[in-house]
Length: 237
Image (cartoon, rainbow, N blue to C red; front, side):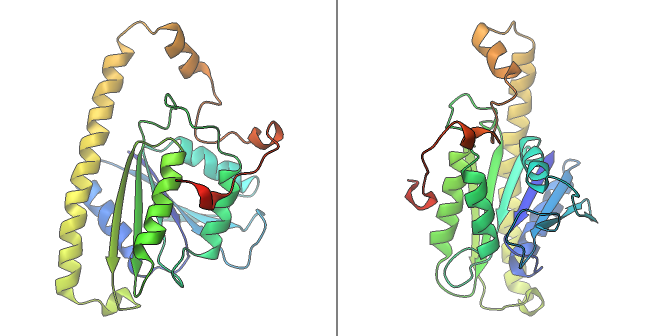
């Protein structure tokens, strides 16, 4: 299973550790290839150091076209995770900037998009208010990309550091995440079985068009050139 994770911050606190619990649960069942993108602070443009990427724990900085690098990773993934703590009742500025940038490059919603069979997951923790608000907004973004199966895991944790969370709470979180990993694996395995069945059939004209059209995916980097109108991410329902 190929997994891409975009973190709203480079701080490895409660939200990060919830993601790691999920990855560990998945590793118990199947091999996974993980790309983790950590958004860098004080990097307003999309230059070399806009984000760092950890590929199976090896940190890299894409030297050219960092956004294209991220887009390719999203397109190649089976599971896409948006992980962000609540900061002042909202997502982090870094993640908001990135998602708005990707939003302007997103193709029109297509019910036959190659993104339909992917799995989306939103993970967030907070010490205060705003949890429901940001998780629902992040879920809407994944749905807009064309992902049909989107899950949410959220938890209010009053401790700022993961080390301060008591063992009983961690065990409860781990139990919920383990159940969540089972649901994700069930969809993933069913999609593999479906793809194997479809591959044995003679494709129709429409199927051939979908499989050959390289732009029929999550993001078309030339989309903004052919459209002059602008969408507001806050108006997605």
